[in-house]
Length: 271
Image (tube, rainbow, N blue to C red):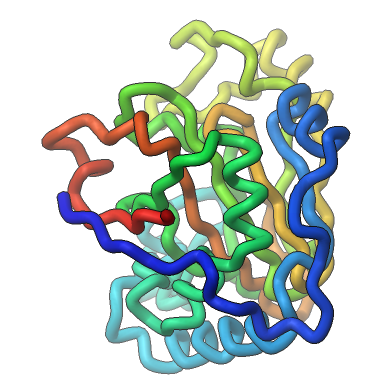
């Protein structure tokens, strides 16, 4: 696994800069709930650049992509040859698609906030997330309740994902839902199905899911959430696609387990 050094002082192209850091109340919210939102964190020019890169990737899907039909989540086409079977769910390896994605993960206002949550020395893995999540009308699917750490391999379950809304995210177009405080809970393996989604048929899980909250975002808003926070997403019932950029960060002293998928790609070192 290689490491790439990036400069966190890359200037944002926003007309007006947001607050440099989270407030103390914001940090407390993250510690308690496992997530926090920074409104209008991404500048408009950078957001437009990332949106343009997204449309380019959808128009020419020669890079690594994931199709809705591949995962067979509820609502997905049954195969790539079925109607809607070539609907793209994720543009993978976003970092390699446009330098704007590097500008984003190096944005000072973003880096400062991640350091508040994880400590002064942080790394951005490229083996997980590092993508544009796309949710298209008609053929989008539902994602069950899960923790991202379910398929990651690190020394500790201590990572934070950063979810940038490139456009509005609402209940009707498939926004994320979260269950507050679940990053601090322990769960028996019997509460999960073979794919490590929460089993909604269990009473204790149904009671937990009843505490869910929607995460509705405007363009440029950013959701920070812990890798153990349960989250899910519905289908896009609107007439317009929804796009979100997602990267993950870890403390420098929380490396991936050697030989696992988490150690399979280079990482970005943020000085």
